[in-house]
Image (cartoon, rainbow, N blue to C red; front, top):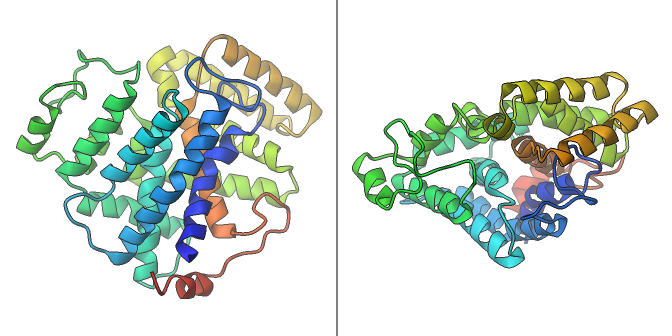
Length: 330
């Protein structure tokens, strides 16, 4: 079924992001964390596939009822963690990719021209227009299931229910707090939420950077690493900011720029600097996880727009016409 192919393209990002080596501070093929292993992310990428298919179909049918995307975000998080048995591998990537899958189905139903800028813009608009309180409840459930160490029952939440409150459902309903509202307030301290609210500006730049690196003949592995370094060099990773502060993030951005300025990870000097940088962040348990979520999403967008030979030098584009025809029977 054609939708399965599209859902596979969107699900590829988390797997192809984690295999890139050496990716400073994050899980990769030669480094595990105490609660997440390399294999956990591969399992997660497989879990994404049926949920992406469901979301594309939901967007194509255009019947947005009591819940828009929250149930799918929660489903990906819960199923992934229950299957691999480790910690959080996908809250950020599912928050980014689920609205994109919905937007893809929506645009195909509307017979609209599909490019990644339009896809990103519509993703944000759909969440803004159609998300509900039930979406918020499912989103809270996903966070409660993960129990992230950087959140506490004592956190001030600016009038929003604390995620660990036993009354969070009632409070969300009473105040009519939709998922869009949650993402808006979270955007002040969370780059993933900010991406959805603002139409994925960093993700789009990262996708363009990845495509440019590949067009220059850079090997896939190094192109992904350079894209990750690009995001680190231009963006404040809010996970690092929460745990380690601004000065550490500034240092990380500076080191990422330094590697890119000498030619990137595919050069001998750049690779030597990269390995030392990876060892340094790993030894200090500094994990720019939000940046990895953005890179994973950019890989998925690249895969979606290319469709064939995505990690080779001469990709074959899937045309918009073929996409529309193939999904006509959804």
